[in-house]
Length: 175
Ligand code: S3P
Image (cartoon, rainbow, N blue to C red; front, side):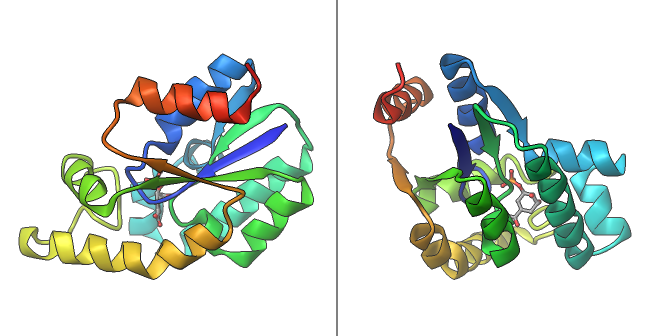
């Protein structure tokens, strides 16, 4: 089985993905990490030295190269914007990825992201006063697409990490 986790920045795609893969005995791949390895730059550096458009191109290229390998039994954590590109969705569909939307409440995301903005180029230069509005507007602009393309809309409430992980694992019914 091939599983792709997606959702907004700060949703916990990478940490959930890593642990889920461990529980399933699957490989774990983080798309942003793959992009950094491919380019030899951090995500911040790519946005700074080039642009978001350049980042989206390399994001697609790295996903495509990865998809070509046709690997199975994996959990792939996407970046927060990856699923928005129809060409990326097509690649995932080509290999029958089971797409899971990690759906975290916007208020929780906003609080989390306040302490995790440095490594996130879309957020790190925002003024304090603009932060909440920007995050909310970006989330609202993506929400419909996130929901529309989910094979599973996995809602994470105020439970702790271990509970979410166990719930997701049980849901997949692979234990
Ligand atoms: C982005 C999310 C980031 C990273 C890049 C763009 C986005 O990944 O791909 O900064 O557009 O939401 P995370 O969701 O892992 O932070």
